[in-house]
Image (cartoon, rainbow, N blue to C red; front, side, top):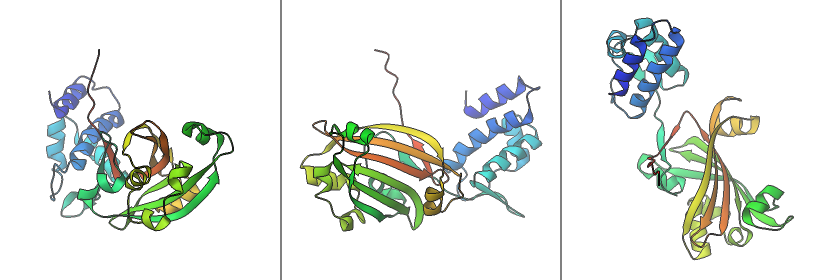
Length: 254
């Protein structure tokens, strides 16, 4: 059963449910179609067509489209219908890659190095690196732009011996992963990640050019070398309106 048929089946069996609940169901399916460019460069189907497709009322479809407009994904143009307003670039979760490596098909990633240098590691950071309390690490803050538009704010802690070999000028044009591998003389091996939603604080909002409190995707990632030594701890805030996380998970019950 397709996702659209699933929505239709659920709607037909839940006539008493609030329209807002049904609108969210429709919006979730439409959102994925928009992100996967199912509608191409043309407008979305007319509200009457969508209502028939989803087995929903026209008011429910209109409310679903309002949700997508609120997210900045579509816009209504008089005489033209509902058009895709913004493209979200996909960020894969299946491989350990730098941002420029991941998004190379979608344009140019440029890094603005806002801060670089040694700092005393917070206790929690030192422990993640296996360093004693009070040890220094190298701290890097970068604003990352895709095709000139702000995409992410990266706060990075580097193992001191690795960070000491890097230069801010190199970080401005290259992914830190490549630089780490060159400095260490071995490849990165793996990373532990945590992904959650956070609201933009005043600093992040100003740098990423979003309203304070806007939804951001926060990625925490601890990357290790092939020999298992942790060398890179990053806190990356992505603009949620410009990036979508994607991956393929395999079910293993053994």
